[in-house]
Length: 231
Image (cartoon, rainbow, N blue to C red; front, top):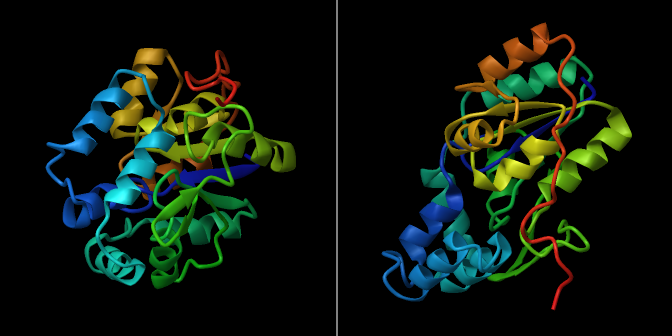
């Protein structure tokens, strides 16, 4: 294996921090108003995840400091991740974090766990305004393109293992050489016939990587549904 890329929300962090922040600080936490329409449009394939993130970020009625403090107090990391990161470093494998969320909470939560040194690919948050420096240059679906993150890591380091848990990880999973999946990502991989290894925590991932021999090539296939020229 050449490199490991790991999703943050729901994977490194036991919570989806964006969901927690919207439930606590959003002006439409019950999703009975404007955010309900955003959810409907996303489920219908009319908008991409990037549009959802922008709307959710705009709904948050709190300062950056309040949002970060809440995340630090209420959103723990998987306790097996820090030992996993140490093992990966001992093995000489590059380890990167990728997140398609609000972004502001990722560095503080990693720093609190002594993991501030890990490189993070994510969106950019400036006082409630999101921008997307890690987006694909053509696709307008996701904010952070995890497919692109996997391909960049492969070009630098060789075969890539990807670890994730949710729908925003589906293209990282499709284009990785080895995918570890749980929860919604595992369901997606089963539906799409994407080979994956199930896991519960990072001890499972470490043991599997330690034993892993030859693996399947990336599934590849069609690009994501948002793959179109921006308007």
